[in-house]
Image (cartoon, rainbow, N blue to C red; front, side, top):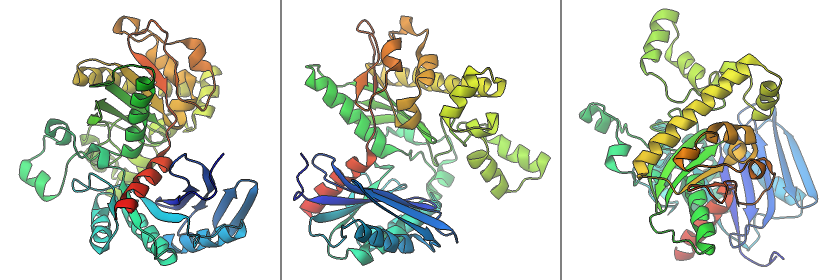
Length: 405
């Protein structure tokens, strides 16, 4: 049973036009309340909260993320909770871009706040929103520590050869152009969960060679050796890498110039095309894999080709990362598509038996919210599904920083 007197952490995730929140126990992950404020910055915003059987909602304008935090405060009151509860020992803020400087979660002070805002040059849709969310949360909870947990932190220790582009050295240094990665909190959580799962079964996990595939609307892959990330698919921005819901992933950079010269598109429109109007949505008109799976099963040619392109990119990364690691012990899938779309996993892994990967089709099709193995006992590579829990990871990291503050 959850301990109602145990310390709680409030986790805030300020997105470009939303603010997600969760109040939870960092020890066991028990969630007291969770919700979201949507369409931030628009005239017709909305918000919901769920706290066990109690729920509440809001509809109306949400001027910015500071205003969103005020709405969160009211929603908590609606369901009989309070942000002034002395069980709340810290607030953990998800920050997308920490640059090369922040390799660990840190207590937010004036300098850290300024740095997060300055790094908005690299992640304008997210870091500026994070600063507003931090300001709003600090105004409401001034007496507790506020901790920044960076999405890029897990990848700050990438080997130099993996962290840099073959770009003019002076230009890269002056404009901080390098590979920062993203989804690091998820990749770190999942890779650690895999190690703990295998260690509990008596397996030696020293130097474990893992590939983690975080497949959601945004998608990324990482190669992890022991407890250290040695490669990741996202780069300076989240556009690089795998095919995603609305993003192209890897693309010839000259396409930017081609679209400008031949079609007359400006920078903003090209950015919109590559990030919001491409990927699965751009190829087949759908980005939700539930719809895509039904379309593929019905013989839709566009959906079938889009899925083949999606899986082909996954195979390229699976192969290249296996070589980067010098072999592969564990392949794990996480996030919405990774956890819930058997078709993608089956199409990716079928035919790789001679490379040591043998998928158990029955286990692959089974539904569960638990971490589980979906490879056969004979498979040299263990294949797992590991549900990610970024909120719990943020809460645990924030709790640890707060205790040492």
